[in-house]
Image 1 (cartoon, rainbow, N blue to C red):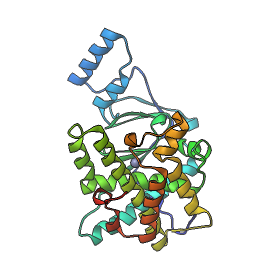
Image 2 (cartoon, protein in one colour):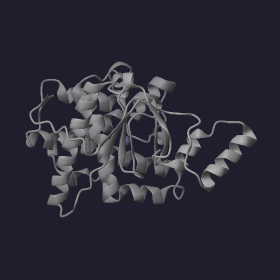
Image 3 (spheres, rainbow, N blue to C red):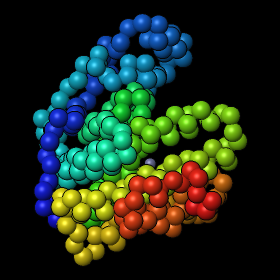
Length: 287
Ligand SMILES: [Zn+2]
Protein backbone atom coordinates (compact mmCIF):
# COMPACT_ATOMS: atom_id res chain seq x y z
CA UNK A 1 0.00 0.00 0.00
CA UNK A 2 1.39 3.32 -1.04
CA UNK A 3 0.25 6.68 0.24
CA UNK A 4 -0.31 9.18 -2.53
CA UNK A 5 -1.85 11.76 -0.25
CA UNK A 6 -1.75 10.92 3.44
CA UNK A 7 -3.72 13.07 5.85
CA UNK A 8 -1.75 13.34 9.13
CA UNK A 9 -4.29 15.59 10.81
CA UNK A 10 -4.25 15.19 14.60
CA UNK A 11 -7.36 17.22 15.48
CA UNK A 12 -9.34 14.02 16.20
CA UNK A 13 -6.44 12.15 17.74
CA UNK A 14 -5.76 11.43 21.40
CA UNK A 15 -2.35 9.98 22.13
CA UNK A 16 -2.25 8.02 25.38
CA UNK A 17 0.87 6.02 24.61
CA UNK A 18 3.14 5.65 27.59
CA UNK A 19 0.48 6.75 30.02
CA UNK A 20 -0.13 4.65 33.08
CA UNK A 21 -2.57 5.45 35.78
CA UNK A 22 -1.57 5.48 39.41
CA UNK A 23 -3.33 2.68 41.26
CA UNK A 24 -4.14 5.02 44.11
CA UNK A 25 -5.13 7.85 41.81
CA UNK A 26 -8.17 9.83 42.79
CA UNK A 27 -11.20 8.83 40.77
CA UNK A 28 -14.39 10.76 40.20
CA UNK A 29 -16.45 11.22 43.35
CA UNK A 30 -20.12 10.56 43.80
CA UNK A 31 -22.22 7.61 44.73
CA UNK A 32 -20.67 5.22 42.21
CA UNK A 33 -17.26 5.57 43.78
CA UNK A 34 -18.67 5.12 47.26
CA UNK A 35 -20.39 1.89 46.26
CA UNK A 36 -17.20 0.66 44.64
CA UNK A 37 -15.19 1.58 47.72
CA UNK A 38 -17.70 -0.28 49.89
CA UNK A 39 -17.34 -3.35 47.66
CA UNK A 40 -13.60 -3.03 47.89
CA UNK A 41 -13.62 -2.80 51.66
CA UNK A 42 -15.93 -5.75 52.10
CA UNK A 43 -14.29 -8.15 49.75
CA UNK A 44 -10.74 -6.93 49.51
CA UNK A 45 -10.80 -7.38 45.76
CA UNK A 46 -9.61 -4.95 43.19
CA UNK A 47 -12.60 -3.26 41.61
CA UNK A 48 -10.68 -0.74 39.58
CA UNK A 49 -12.25 -1.96 36.31
CA UNK A 50 -15.63 -1.09 37.82
CA UNK A 51 -14.31 2.28 38.94
CA UNK A 52 -13.29 2.93 35.37
CA UNK A 53 -16.86 2.46 34.25
CA UNK A 54 -18.00 5.14 36.66
CA UNK A 55 -15.24 7.59 35.97
CA UNK A 56 -15.65 7.33 32.21
CA UNK A 57 -12.95 8.94 30.12
CA UNK A 58 -10.46 8.88 32.93
CA UNK A 59 -10.21 12.65 33.05
CA UNK A 60 -10.15 12.71 36.83
CA UNK A 61 -7.39 10.14 37.17
CA UNK A 62 -3.81 11.16 37.56
CA UNK A 63 -1.67 9.94 34.71
CA UNK A 64 2.00 9.22 34.67
CA UNK A 65 3.75 9.31 31.33
CA UNK A 66 6.69 7.06 30.63
CA UNK A 67 8.72 9.09 28.12
CA UNK A 68 10.41 5.92 26.83
CA UNK A 69 7.06 4.62 25.61
CA UNK A 70 5.45 7.88 24.49
CA UNK A 71 6.34 7.26 20.85
CA UNK A 72 6.06 3.49 20.85
CA UNK A 73 5.14 1.95 17.47
CA UNK A 74 5.29 5.36 15.82
CA UNK A 75 5.30 3.92 12.28
CA UNK A 76 2.17 1.90 13.05
CA UNK A 77 0.54 5.00 14.53
CA UNK A 78 1.26 7.05 11.41
CA UNK A 79 -0.23 4.31 9.21
CA UNK A 80 -3.30 3.68 11.34
CA UNK A 81 -4.01 7.39 11.90
CA UNK A 82 -3.65 7.98 8.16
CA UNK A 83 -6.26 5.30 7.48
CA UNK A 84 -8.50 6.71 10.21
CA UNK A 85 -8.36 10.19 8.65
CA UNK A 86 -8.88 8.82 5.16
CA UNK A 87 -11.88 6.77 6.32
CA UNK A 88 -13.39 9.93 7.81
CA UNK A 89 -12.86 11.75 4.51
CA UNK A 90 -14.56 8.90 2.63
CA UNK A 91 -17.49 8.76 5.05
CA UNK A 92 -17.93 12.53 5.07
CA UNK A 93 -18.43 12.29 1.31
CA UNK A 94 -20.74 9.23 1.41
CA UNK A 95 -22.91 10.85 4.10
CA UNK A 96 -23.07 14.08 2.08
CA UNK A 97 -24.18 12.16 -1.00
CA UNK A 98 -26.96 10.61 1.07
CA UNK A 99 -28.11 13.94 2.48
CA UNK A 100 -26.63 13.41 5.92
CA UNK A 101 -23.88 14.97 7.94
CA UNK A 102 -20.97 12.88 9.19
CA UNK A 103 -19.55 13.43 12.70
CA UNK A 104 -15.95 12.30 13.11
CA UNK A 105 -15.00 9.94 15.91
CA UNK A 106 -11.77 10.30 17.92
CA UNK A 107 -8.78 8.02 17.46
CA UNK A 108 -7.06 6.94 20.69
CA UNK A 109 -3.75 5.09 20.85
CA UNK A 110 -2.67 3.55 24.13
CA UNK A 111 -0.20 1.13 25.63
CA UNK A 112 -1.18 -1.72 27.98
CA UNK A 113 -4.32 -0.28 29.50
CA UNK A 114 -6.76 2.58 29.16
CA UNK A 115 -10.22 3.67 30.18
CA UNK A 116 -13.23 4.40 28.02
CA UNK A 117 -16.91 5.17 28.45
CA UNK A 118 -17.39 1.44 27.80
CA UNK A 119 -15.15 0.47 30.70
CA UNK A 120 -11.49 -0.23 31.21
CA UNK A 121 -9.60 -1.88 28.39
CA UNK A 122 -6.37 -3.82 28.43
CA UNK A 123 -4.36 -4.77 25.38
CA UNK A 124 -6.04 -8.18 25.52
CA UNK A 125 -9.28 -6.62 24.31
CA UNK A 126 -7.83 -5.72 20.92
CA UNK A 127 -8.91 -2.69 18.93
CA UNK A 128 -12.44 -1.56 19.68
CA UNK A 129 -14.94 1.23 19.18
CA UNK A 130 -16.88 2.64 22.12
CA UNK A 131 -20.26 4.12 21.08
CA UNK A 132 -20.54 5.90 24.45
CA UNK A 133 -17.68 8.30 23.75
CA UNK A 134 -17.43 7.80 19.97
CA UNK A 135 -13.76 6.85 20.15
CA UNK A 136 -11.75 4.17 18.35
CA UNK A 137 -9.30 2.59 20.82
CA UNK A 138 -6.14 1.20 19.33
CA UNK A 139 -3.41 -0.63 21.17
CA UNK A 140 -0.78 -0.53 18.44
CA UNK A 141 0.92 -3.68 19.78
CA UNK A 142 -2.08 -5.58 18.44
CA UNK A 143 -0.68 -5.13 14.95
CA UNK A 144 2.44 -7.10 15.92
CA UNK A 145 0.11 -9.81 17.22
CA UNK A 146 -1.83 -9.71 13.96
CA UNK A 147 1.35 -10.16 11.93
CA UNK A 148 2.97 -12.82 14.12
CA UNK A 149 0.35 -14.76 16.10
CA UNK A 150 -2.47 -14.41 13.59
CA UNK A 151 -0.04 -14.60 10.67
CA UNK A 152 -1.64 -11.67 8.87
CA UNK A 153 1.16 -9.23 8.11
CA UNK A 154 1.04 -6.24 5.81
CA UNK A 155 -0.12 -2.66 5.75
CA UNK A 156 -3.56 -3.39 4.35
CA UNK A 157 -4.18 -5.82 7.21
CA UNK A 158 -3.66 -2.90 9.61
CA UNK A 159 -5.73 -0.64 7.39
CA UNK A 160 -8.57 -3.19 7.32
CA UNK A 161 -8.68 -3.36 11.13
CA UNK A 162 -8.65 0.44 11.44
CA UNK A 163 -11.32 0.99 8.76
CA UNK A 164 -13.45 -1.75 10.37
CA UNK A 165 -13.47 0.16 13.68
CA UNK A 166 -14.43 3.41 11.93
CA UNK A 167 -17.19 1.31 10.33
CA UNK A 168 -18.59 0.66 13.82
CA UNK A 169 -18.75 4.43 14.33
CA UNK A 170 -20.69 4.78 11.07
CA UNK A 171 -23.10 2.16 12.41
CA UNK A 172 -23.59 4.22 15.53
CA UNK A 173 -24.40 7.32 13.46
CA UNK A 174 -26.82 5.30 11.33
CA UNK A 175 -28.64 3.92 14.39
CA UNK A 176 -27.64 0.25 14.05
CA UNK A 177 -25.79 0.23 17.34
CA UNK A 178 -28.82 1.56 19.27
CA UNK A 179 -31.01 -1.02 17.56
CA UNK A 180 -28.67 -3.76 18.78
CA UNK A 181 -28.82 -2.39 22.32
CA UNK A 182 -32.61 -2.56 22.27
CA UNK A 183 -32.48 -6.23 21.33
CA UNK A 184 -30.08 -7.11 24.12
CA UNK A 185 -31.83 -9.27 26.70
CA UNK A 186 -35.05 -9.36 24.64
CA UNK A 187 -34.00 -12.03 22.17
CA UNK A 188 -32.34 -15.39 22.67
CA UNK A 189 -28.59 -15.53 22.87
CA UNK A 190 -28.47 -17.29 19.53
CA UNK A 191 -30.55 -14.53 17.91
CA UNK A 192 -28.44 -11.84 19.50
CA UNK A 193 -25.28 -13.52 18.22
CA UNK A 194 -26.81 -13.53 14.73
CA UNK A 195 -27.38 -9.76 14.97
CA UNK A 196 -23.84 -9.32 16.21
CA UNK A 197 -22.53 -11.24 13.19
CA UNK A 198 -24.54 -8.95 10.89
CA UNK A 199 -23.09 -5.89 12.61
CA UNK A 200 -19.53 -7.20 12.27
CA UNK A 201 -19.91 -8.26 8.64
CA UNK A 202 -21.27 -4.83 7.83
CA UNK A 203 -18.18 -3.25 9.45
CA UNK A 204 -16.07 -5.55 7.24
CA UNK A 205 -18.05 -4.41 4.21
CA UNK A 206 -17.40 -0.80 5.26
CA UNK A 207 -13.67 -1.55 5.52
CA UNK A 208 -13.70 -2.82 1.93
CA UNK A 209 -15.73 0.21 0.92
CA UNK A 210 -13.02 2.43 2.38
CA UNK A 211 -10.31 0.74 0.27
CA UNK A 212 -12.41 1.26 -2.88
CA UNK A 213 -12.92 4.96 -2.22
CA UNK A 214 -9.46 5.69 -0.83
CA UNK A 215 -8.07 4.43 -4.14
CA UNK A 216 -10.65 6.36 -6.13
CA UNK A 217 -9.95 9.58 -4.21
CA UNK A 218 -6.24 9.20 -4.90
CA UNK A 219 -5.32 8.78 -1.22
CA UNK A 220 -3.70 5.37 -1.56
CA UNK A 221 -2.40 3.16 -4.31
CA UNK A 222 -2.66 -0.60 -4.00
CA UNK A 223 0.39 -2.75 -4.55
CA UNK A 224 0.80 -6.42 -5.25
CA UNK A 225 -0.39 -8.57 -2.35
CA UNK A 226 -2.32 -5.79 -0.57
CA UNK A 227 -5.80 -7.24 -0.97
CA UNK A 228 -4.44 -10.67 0.05
CA UNK A 229 -3.03 -9.00 3.14
CA UNK A 230 -6.43 -7.57 4.14
CA UNK A 231 -8.07 -10.92 3.39
CA UNK A 232 -5.45 -12.63 5.55
CA UNK A 233 -6.53 -10.46 8.47
CA UNK A 234 -10.25 -11.05 7.82
CA UNK A 235 -9.53 -14.77 7.65
CA UNK A 236 -7.50 -14.73 10.87
CA UNK A 237 -10.21 -13.01 12.89
CA UNK A 238 -13.03 -15.25 11.65
CA UNK A 239 -14.90 -16.95 14.51
CA UNK A 240 -14.26 -20.43 13.08
CA UNK A 241 -10.52 -19.76 12.67
CA UNK A 242 -10.22 -18.50 16.24
CA UNK A 243 -12.35 -21.27 17.75
CA UNK A 244 -10.40 -23.94 15.89
CA UNK A 245 -7.18 -22.50 17.21
CA UNK A 246 -8.29 -21.98 20.80
CA UNK A 247 -10.60 -24.96 21.46
CA UNK A 248 -10.07 -27.25 18.48
CA UNK A 249 -13.69 -27.24 17.31
CA UNK A 250 -16.33 -24.74 16.19
CA UNK A 251 -19.71 -23.81 17.67
CA UNK A 252 -21.56 -21.85 14.94
CA UNK A 253 -24.36 -20.67 17.27
CA UNK A 254 -21.77 -18.90 19.40
CA UNK A 255 -20.31 -16.95 16.48
CA UNK A 256 -20.40 -13.19 17.03
CA UNK A 257 -18.25 -11.90 14.17
CA UNK A 258 -18.84 -14.30 11.29
CA UNK A 259 -16.78 -17.03 9.69
CA UNK A 260 -13.50 -16.33 7.94
CA UNK A 261 -15.21 -16.93 4.60
CA UNK A 262 -18.04 -14.49 5.41
CA UNK A 263 -15.68 -11.79 6.66
CA UNK A 264 -13.51 -12.02 3.56
CA UNK A 265 -16.53 -12.06 1.26
CA UNK A 266 -18.20 -8.98 2.79
CA UNK A 267 -14.90 -7.11 2.77
CA UNK A 268 -14.51 -7.97 -0.93
CA UNK A 269 -18.09 -6.94 -1.68
CA UNK A 270 -17.42 -3.49 -0.24
CA UNK A 271 -14.10 -3.23 -2.04
CA UNK A 272 -15.46 -4.35 -5.41
CA UNK A 273 -18.75 -2.44 -5.49
CA UNK A 274 -17.84 0.70 -3.55
CA UNK A 275 -21.60 0.96 -3.18
CA UNK A 276 -22.68 1.91 0.34
CA UNK A 277 -26.22 0.61 -0.26
CA UNK A 278 -25.07 -2.95 -0.87
CA UNK A 279 -23.89 -3.33 2.72
CA UNK A 280 -27.29 -3.95 4.28
CA UNK A 281 -26.33 -7.11 6.15
CA UNK A 282 -29.31 -6.70 8.48
CA UNK A 283 -31.77 -7.40 5.67
CA UNK A 284 -29.62 -9.87 3.77
CA UNK A 285 -31.31 -13.28 3.49
CA UNK A 286 -27.98 -15.05 3.23
CA UNK A 287 -24.84 -13.87 4.92
ZN1 LIG B 1 -15.92 -5.26 15.00
